[in-house]
Length: 251
Length: 251
Image (cartoon, rainbow over all chains, first blue to last red; front, side, top):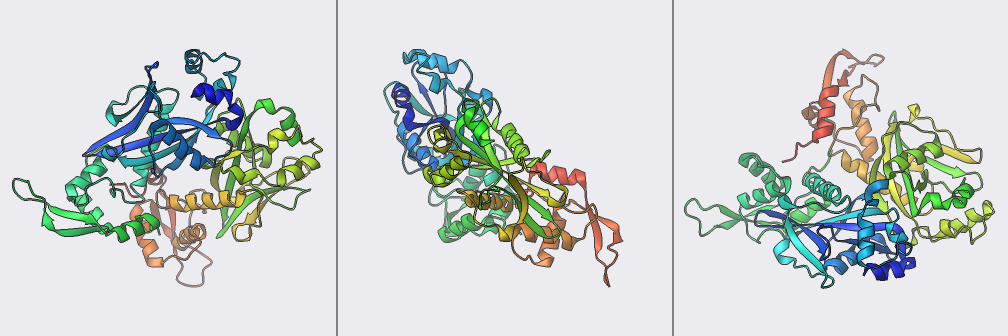
């Protein structure tokens, strides 16, 4: 695929790429979707180049689909990365060698690239990636166990997580990530997993209740030894309203 | 200057620009720094191209300095704009004509450009711009009276203001924008000016006090007919701490 892109480089914006950070949550685990080619030991974020005739938001969707098969994921742009040195390392030449691309032809690819970061948070059990070709591997990797990544992809991943954590102060999360009926401890675990730290149970209960997006159901969780916790669901109208207007209703 | 950039286009990242949205506040007025060349009726955000040997954050600082003479302004990246059509209009050709640049040579400039937006909020009385050359005009223009802007610059400006307003929910503002000693109504006016709407006096007082960044001084504002309001100053240590940790201490 790289060879075909370089052969058709006039169809792509020069010096511009897009990288996607796809976080996956399920059952108290936070994972990240990573990709590598079989000839490489190094993992990368799924990314690619921007066709000259595609808006960047659309290109992000196509690139993610092309590399991982994923569709229908709401990607949000979070930051653009553009230090001079970010792709001036050995990686480019190794890849050119592998694809038997002469250095002269590969110049386009080896030149300075600025990359636009997009991110999303999905339920990883319901999001099953397909690699692009048989030389590629796509996997959900535990966030805690992410290995070295190529280029500045670790920095891009960290910045995406920082953005996601900041976003918890602005809008609620949870819809599509929890079962339809859930307990407050399950919701708290989601927040704790994203934040990477424990939260005080009573504070969390007070704050999450104050938002007004939860409906207390007339059911308790079954299969629990004793003191079965109450079940809740999201009030979708309220939830969407708070997503629109923000958690703190501002000033 | 455009001519010299096109003549030396190999020194610039192809298809990439930076635009700066500089908001100015003083005495209940919100202004925006805009620029135009004397041959044009249309205003623009101060922007420019990215030297191949400069990191984008550094390029933003150089570009702002080059176009407006401003220095020492803390610019924050907020979004990257990259629809296919954003610069595919008549503007390019008109500018090429003005500079007597042949269309063929101007192809680099007329091709698709993706632009990275940076913004800042400063005290406009203390921020005096200098145009780059005698053909350029740089002015603080009332935000309420911003005319049509070139390309998608209005969209970029709107997005920057949206980001600034969102930021009011995350960190305090005011330092360097108000006199050292100020009244609560003055601080409220700053928030109202940024938000573009009136706030409830008692709610504002309650919320702003709860943040814990204000020191109530043993002085009242003079030159006020009766019921002189109390003066306050920012507790710099607390203020910086809240800037670091966020207004809502999260979850």
